[in-house]
Image 1 (tube, rainbow, N blue to C red):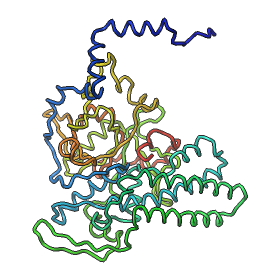
Image 2 (image 1 turned 45 degrees about the vertical axis):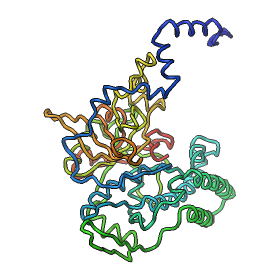
Image 3 (image 1 turned 60 degrees about the horizontal axis):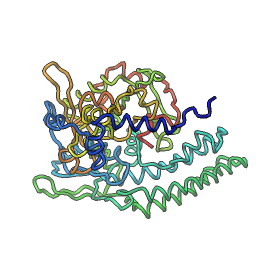
Image 4 (image 1 turned 90 degrees about the horizontal axis):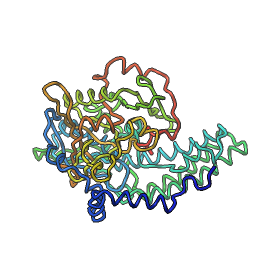
Amino acid sequence: MDASAGVLSPEILNQFYTKFYEDNRNTLAQNVSTRTNPHEACISRRILQESQHVFTHKIATEVKPVTNQKNSGRCWIFSALNIIRIPFMKQYNLDEFEFSQAYLFFWDKLERCNYFLHNIVKTAKQNEPVDGRLVSFLLNDPVTDGGQWDMIVNLINRHGVIPKVCFPESYSSESSSRMNTILKSKLREYSKVLRDLISSGATNEKIEAQILEQMTVIYRILGICLGIPSKTITWEYYDKSKNYNCIGPITPIDFYEKYVKPYYNVDDKVCLVTDPRPSNPFGKLYTIDCLGNVVGGRPTLYNNQPPELLMKLCAESIKQNEPVWFGCDVNKRLITKQGILDMKSYDFEHMFGTDIQVNLAKADRLLYGDSMMMHAMALTAVSIDNDGKIKKFRVENSWGDDHGQKGYLILTAEWFSEFVFEAVVDKKIVPADVLNVFKQDPITLPAWDPMGTLAH
């Protein structure tokens, strides 16, 4: 092989230089993009003018305050609790209300660390090498902030929910990276201890005793950083009519069972995904190796369906006055300040002479790492034209009220097809043949599969 093959020689570099300055548009684009954010420079003025936060169907009550996950990856918790609070607030005549996101965050961290340590044991017993792909993947980020719908269900069914005033935010719930760094280091240390125990032939009883000892330390770290939820709560509040009310003392699980579940039962909802990769046919059930948060909890299941069905069921749910939890790749084609998710939001072609983020098909973007589930939000409204065609959705986000229209975004149907991967709807609106997919034995995807990234 020619040793010079592939080398960016002076001759080739000169060709690049000449071709760049032969086109005056490149000079103009350079002048603009070297003085400002290149993404901002590509925003389509036409899309800004044409996008309006008006919809043909909207859930009856959009509630406040707009939530803010701050510097944490808790979008999946925030979006779930944002949806659950809507019927709850209507039932109890509340003007403003939030469930405690920090409460579920505490229990997720504790359960997730326990789940991770048991995965280390499982993989060690399977003779997975510590430097092999699976264990290396697990050790790379042992306790992330992200999560999936089935993981929310696990937390609520085991630990319940409580009002935010009963367990408020802390520094480490709003900015979790430093606490996570501490936890990750301990979990990697504990992984070495557990793998050495298994190598020495320790009994299951001795291994579980070791994990219990390790989890005592994890609990201590979490308690110091986040606070520890009370075993019972008492919630005092004024309703819209300024009437005083008091609930409790009551356990968080009883609070959910008695005061929340009758109006929003997480077990009545099903999670559908759309993964168009040829290796993963629609109409099949999937799970991901080692993905979860609660030992003994329900597995994370993906019922794979075409995007058109997900979009149709999302619209139907909104028409029946129930918002939709969904997972997407929010960073693609997002105009952040105005809150617009549109395939035509950016005119990269005229700025750079090539388009960006759309030259690969959705399946290829997954395969080549250019797109994946990164964020969870809630759909609260939809526009449907006179021909019955879905045009756009309204989105409640958890980034505070200084993004979009006071915290709400617009998402077009075209964007939905390309960058939405998951939606949760009530099983009563799902066709029987789709529900029957949940009866299949799931196909296990590897731990590093891109469909698991929302939980990483």
